[in-house]
Amino acid sequence: MLNKTQIYDFHKKNGKLVEFAGFEMPIWYKGIIEECLAVRNAAGIFDVSHMGRAFIYGEEDEAFLNYLTPNDVSMLKPGMGHYSVMCNEQGGIIDDLILLKLKDKFLMVFNASNRSKDLAWMYKQAEKFKVKIDHVSDQIAMFAIQGPKAREITQEIAKENVYDIPRFGVGELTLNGVKCLASGTGYTGEDGFEIFVLDASIEKPQNAFKVWGSILEVGKKYGLEPCGLGARDVLRLEAGMCLYGNDIDESTTPFEAKISWVVKLNKKSDFIGRKALEKQKIEGIKKCRVGLKLKSRGIPRHGYEILKNNQVIGKVTSGTLSPILNVGIAMGYIPVEYSNPGEILQIKIRDKLVDAEVVNVPFYDTTKYGWKREK
Image 1 (cartoon, helix red, strand yellow):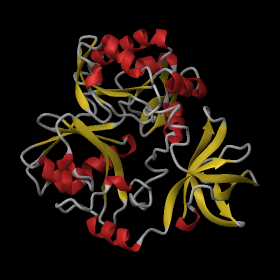
Image 2 (cartoon, helix red, strand yellow):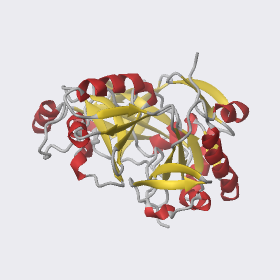
Image 3 (cartoon, one colour):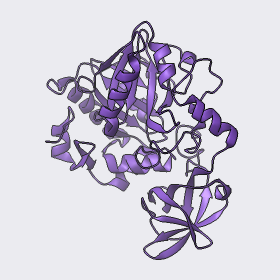
Image 4 (cartoon, helix red, strand yellow):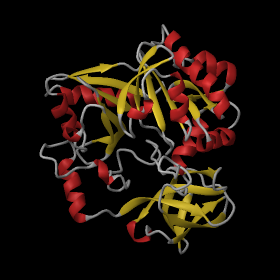
């Protein structure tokens, strides 16, 4: 029996449903390309209620989170958040996550596919601390509104000023009369919010429908579209963001994944994986994640081989056709010596070797697309 999110009835009526991480989720509504372009040019709304959510609070909540994650939680002021990971003792990534600091507690958002693994790991580590972990995934609905028009649309149904919530900030918003939290985060590279509808359980989803429906209604005139998992995957790949299980897992470290900013080796407190990561920092890495852009036609897919001088040097971890660039893009792990931007490699696509250039991510021009775009 598959799990359903609070607004499953909307998806069933309007979308094409697939199984994802034990949930029945929409892969698309109108179509992946149309939904991607809506987010890049106007706005899109995603149901991400399948993600894991937990409140963490208590006397030693900060100390616990500083031990659990390599990022520096003591740097977070109330109303701010950051991207982070949980590592094992070898420095491998158990999961990537968003951590938000509220007035009197923390809110952690983690991957749907890792819900039970993450919670088991956190409960185990929490035994050493005066801290409580409140798993609230089924009590709170979660939506992402993303795109250059996302803030304007949200403002139309908000009582408060949404512009007070910066990128990676978090604050309270009343949307269509419903109490929510909103964070300036997302998985598309665009501006926007992830909205947490506080009183919206699986059993009583009325508030979830109220918020979702009002965003769809107001968003119509802006060109907002409801978006499925297909568009979400393409958009995050264009933005150069990792997908857990594909681009990062317990056999990769944050240094190899090129997300080294989540590791603060200068923080005073100990954290899980510290020794291994300190060692790797000194010795250097042998492989790393890179962006690859095809030089001719073709669509690179997960598992395709990456070659240099006819030797297999790695595999594609994520690949797609970018709707805004109209070219095949991919990410994968290769030896560090081949990882400089401009390096030409090959990807084997259906028995044919296609040239691919190592590029920096995001794949798009950040002056035209993404949250840093010129207004």
